[in-house]
Picture 1: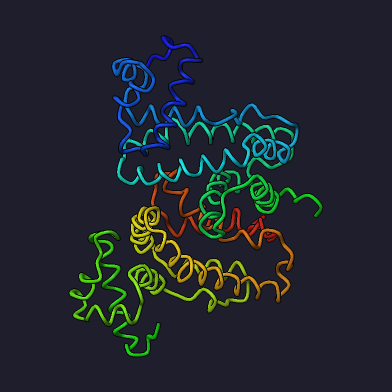
Picture 2: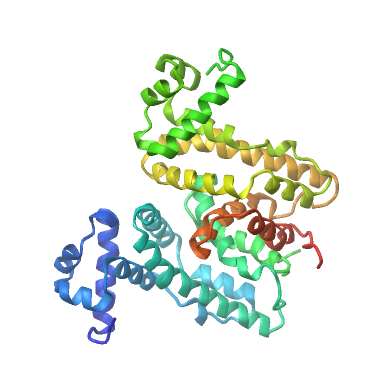
Length: 195
Length: 195
């Protein structure tokens, strides 16, 4: 895949159009024709740049993340975690939740979508989180062999999936901050603030 | 709802038939007619006993749990957690994962199913877990105001959802045991074994 032919602005415009369409019609009804029409581009361009619909959707999702986690560097792991939360306001998290919920249904029926999401969205996020954790290890905040290190993304996924299910409430920054302090930092051996 | 007219054996037979049908045809195609035919009962009986399809499905799932968590009482929280895992073998967990995955799709489209699952399946499980935790508090293992207490089910859900997604592997007893020791016990302030 070559992406050099599009300017970053044009790429962003395309990704946003894909996410708009996803919210409007869902994954199944999202066609490359519809994306081409909405963005006034040719299907040939779309296929040349992204290869396939699952890859285009995964890259659009990745682009929607407000920040590259690995770039967050406040000097403490707790500061980094909280900065990560601060990057997404409640309104955006509610919109993202609806989007991810729709996609999670599509994933059950489209194994190529799951593969694309794993490779282009989930793995880069985990790598970004890992960069943040490596800095905490280098600072001496956590031990390199802490057994919780490999499960941080599992805990995060749990918060996002279980909160609407169990508590019947949309995800908020307040909930995430409390969850980070109550379970993720203590699991890593870092005391919650005020303890 | 009155369930007194059926013997426990007959009830178990009905629940198992519902789960078999769910695995075979999925939630949408599962009809009360199909359940009645498979179990040689009348639809009137099914509606009288369970009220609706979502409630029948939720009760069937609850019945499929091999043990009431609140009854597990080994004398330590780690022992209780590990006994909880020991009750479900890998084969059963893989079967359950497929079932829950199918239902999670149906939940997106059937709000009454979500409500029934929450009331008849999720909340009793959380109550059972809470009973186990209260015993650990009474024994002095964990503090009553430990902030991680309210998030244990979130962490558990995270393991079940994120493991297949991130690691592309089915859930196993070994994975769950490691997760319990690596994050859930340390989050509660209990050291992982060997630390």
